[in-house]
Image (cartoon, rainbow, N blue to C red):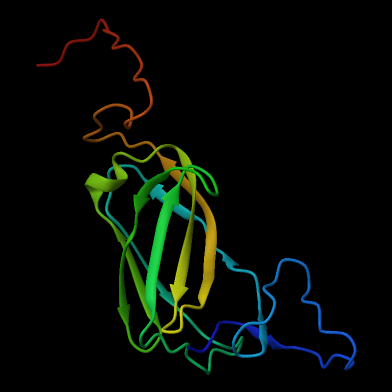
Length: 165
């Protein structure tokens, strides 16, 4: 699998192994160091269907597609890093380098106001790369809203002095 945004490892002196920069994985199978995931926030309107298309490139010029053949893709929304899984995100791969993500209206209706997410790739050798990560921001809906999502207390119902016919 070609990895997104890689830089070559500098040659080390024979008596010292190379040290990866902070926050990067040592000794990837390709002899290269992977960059940190790209930042991408999911802005969701509660109760609406949402879809995103991620086109993955191995270079900044977008001339070399990441080959997703044999790659497993996974994405989840959690309350915080290493926290409780709130919702897995439905993913579809279109070769060579497209990942489509989808959340149905019924799924977004139950999301809390905020969380975190990431998109993880696992190639055929078991090498795991997180290519995108970010915040999840959910705006409450108005039409067809049914109250607060699960896990949060709903405000008590109030009666107004207005009547409709």
